[in-house]
Image (cartoon, rainbow, N blue to C red; front, side):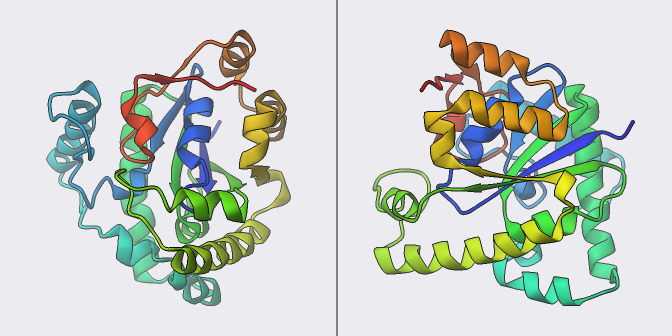
Amino acid sequence: MRKKLVYVMGAGRSGTTILGIILGDNAGIAHVGEINKFLTFSGKSPGRDEKSKVCMFFSDVYEEILDEGCDIDFDYKKEEFHLHLLRFVMCKKKNKCAIKYLYKQKIVFDKLYEKLGASVIVDSSKYSVRAFRLMNISSYDVKLIYLKRSYLGVVKSFQKKKIEQPRKGYLSASIYYLIVNFLAYIVFCLYDKKNRLFVRYEDILTDPEGVLIKIKDGFDVDISNSLEKIREKIPLRTGYIFDGNRVRLQDDIMISK
């Protein structure tokens, strides 16, 4: 049976990291956060002490990949920039760049499956271009979750100051929101219906159990541990997250209605 790769796509500040944490706190499932930055950052998990267990884990993974002599030169911004999507969609054949991209991603994922002992990996890198390109990794059973937050929720979140993620003004945040969600919708429509789900961020807040049951039934994944923890109001472990929202730096988070 092929390993599952669940990709969480959406605009920044839409809750992709939080959804990843919820899914990742289950046996056989590992949420690795924004792992698209892994090769570009040379395996150094940002915002953490170099001696933390998470930072040391990803550093070890990177060193093992280096020791195997793999070609890992990669710039996620060039490879996954939002506006590159139309070019990739219009290109009917897999060009050399696309083949190299998939090769490098597979190297990283294979090593993570091995080191984490997981049969399901949750990648919350959120870029729609990455979601489109990962469709072509035939080694995995790739599933897509398009997570969308309300316009006001995203724009207001971008107004926050003194946090790790960069701030955007109202106009730039509005333009960003419209473009990113338009591109995300295109990619969502390109996925086979059995391999995609649409989730609203607000539903995670008001009905987290309903959202999890939808994902469990739609993708045939066992997320009973998270369901039980939410019902019993028990904190969820954040696990080994490479990058993402600042909540990744906490040992656990509480999800409740």
